[in-house]
Length: 178
Image (tube, rainbow, N blue to C red; front, side):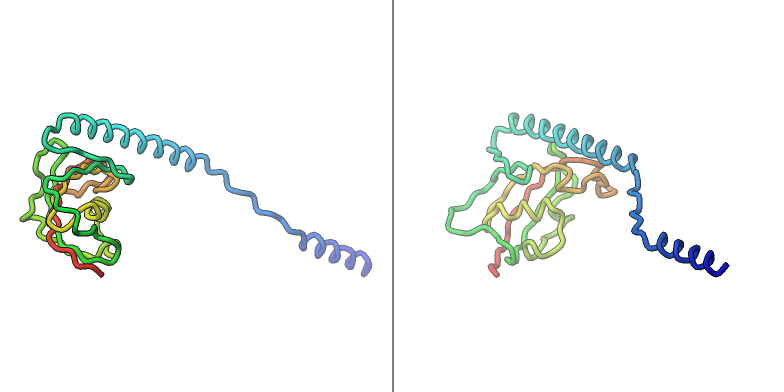
């Protein structure tokens, strides 16, 4: 009897020491959701870029250039090349207005006020963080930003809708180097 008990306990201990690998969860819904979300976002970007192309072709006064970040910019007022562009750590002060891509005013300079921030070190919407780097002191730039750089799929809850591309006009008022 002792022998049987010993064999039984020994076999239980040996079986209990085996490394059992857990089974990976199968989450097909998440994979499908991510793929569909990527398709939706690619479609939104393609639509916004075609809208930008139409606007740029209709624009007579401004000469737009594309940026590596996916937005378009032009200068209303360009200064001589003696000043440098803002870089990380520089403090800048600027004023701006926001329009929809058809030029309808959403927020003017008075509503938004002058903004002062340290480049790439303070929280600001990506459109402003990136756009300000293309301006020298005294310059005024016009930017066509895709929705993912502005207020994205949420909008601002007031005047800016969901996935709405926007036109920003930004004037760099002050540039203090770090």
